[in-house]
Picture 1: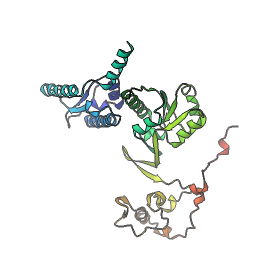
Picture 2: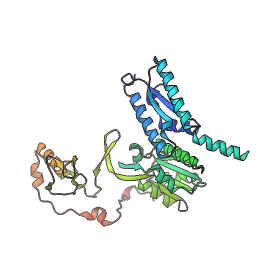
Picture 3: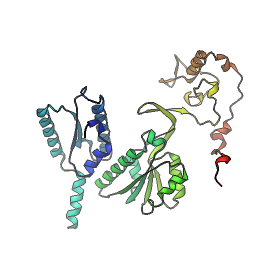
Picture 4: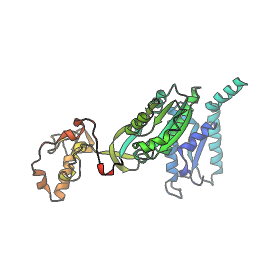
Amino acid sequence: MPCSGTIDHRVLLQTFEDGADGVFVAGCMEGDCHFLKGNFRAKKRVQQVKKILDEIGFGGERLEFYNLSAAQGQRFAEIVKEMTERVLKLGPNPLLAKSCKKEGGAA
Amino acid sequence: MIIAQQKPVKDIAAMISDCNKVLLVGCAGCVTVCLAGGEKETEVLASSLRIMRKLEDKPLETVTYVATRQCDPEYIAALDNLVKDVDAVVSLACGVGVQYIAERFTDKWVVPALDTKFIGGSTVHGNWEEKCGLCGDCILHRTGGICPIIRCSKSILNGPCGGSQYGKCEISKDIDCAWQLIYDRMKALGKLDKLMEFQPPKDWSKSRDGGPRKAVREDVMID
């Protein structure tokens, strides 16, 4: 998407319904938003979806927001590593596990 | 507008725990404006319920629809085909919408996803406050456009009580004393004498004391 400020609660929830193990949203550095507040809005929406995921028992820790500049390749690599490690600890998407179990059972 | 807020997802899920397929109906009226029951909130709730139920190994099928308004029978009729094969209808409208759906579909389990809070407006985006007490006999012309019925914690009609201090209400320093606001505004308008005019006791039969109320406009009724 052209700006993290266009991120929508529905898109984030859909990624998990579609089987994502973890999702992170990278918005521009604070103070650098071309649209002034897009990254702040994205951060708030991500926080709200994390709350929803906690409330429904899925776990909000599978979702995270980071501030990142396009010029920070090294930081991007660090974030990806951080999220990968977090997701590995959490295990696969529990929804996917349920589906596989069911499909396996049916076969 | 009517201000509503969504119930906790767990509470809504509990209401439909024995259902396999539900219809979630949003409303494009007040609850869309106060971000509680519009298209987006309807889809977010549907997704949340699906995830929750899948985690419980009891998948839930959802259908979503947003009615132009849920407080007019003609817009509820549009649900006729959608409700046929669902076990329940979850309404994301105010209490009026829930009742209109329940009245039309008498054999369906209809549940509220929202708590209807009050009549009010927004101060800033994401913040709403109560402004009207629905008393049925508006007196704002006598009180400088400030409603003492809902904005005074005691609904006092003849001036501030002893709990008014430095312009604030005794129940919270965050709540303005409505009568201080009324006095200040009437003074600024040069109309303090209006506050001295004799007023008969308020007729509360026009409010909830008279039972459920009705409003009729015979000239617009279609035979």
